[in-house]
Image (cartoon, rainbow, N blue to C red; front, top):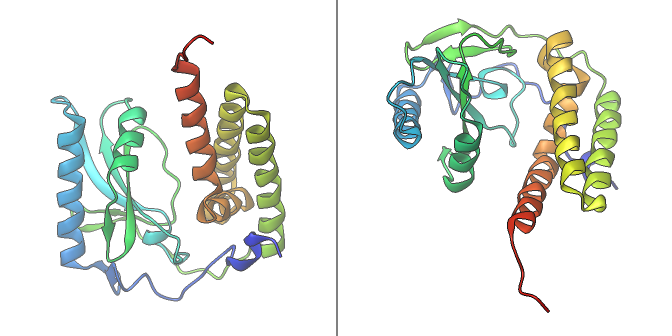
Length: 225
C-alpha cells in the first residue's frame, strides 16, 4: 500500500489543539516560550533595522485541522520586503526546536504580503488577528491523495534526473501550485492539503535536501584523476 494511505489527508477536530490552547486562549507558558524563540531568531538574523511589526502563529496549529505532523508556524511580521530566505532555512535546519513535542518552524513575513490562513494569532499582543471558524471538511480525501500522487511524481522525476535546475524547478512549481490553491480556496484547497500530505511524509524535505546536495556537488572541485 502507498505510504500516503496511512496519513489522514484532511485531519479535523472540534477544538483547537489543547497542547497550545486553553479553549481559544493561548496557554501562557506556550506564548512565553514562543516569544523567547522569536527573540532568539531575531538575534540570529542580526539585523538592526528589522522593523518588526508582530510575531504571529498561523497554519494548522492555529486552526482545527492540526495533526501529529503539524508544525507551529511562527512568523516574524516585518515592515520590509526582505524575507531572509537563506537565513530562515539555515536557522530551521540547524535548530531542532520543539514545544511539547511539536516542531517550531520560523519564518520572516513582509507585512504587505497577503497571508492565507484560517487562523492568525498575535503572540506579541496575545490576541487573535483572525480567529478560526469551525467548519466541517468539504474536500474529498480521494482528490487530495490523487493530487499528492501527482506532486510525488514531479518530485521523483526531478530527483531521478539528477539535474539541479530541474529539481529547483519542481520545488518552485509545487510552491506555486500550493499558493494558487490557497489564494483560490484557502487552507481547504486540494493543492494545499496535497502539499501538506507530502510534507508530512517527508517528501518535500527530501527534495529540499537533494537540492542542497546537488548545489554542494556543483560548487565542489574534485581532484584530477
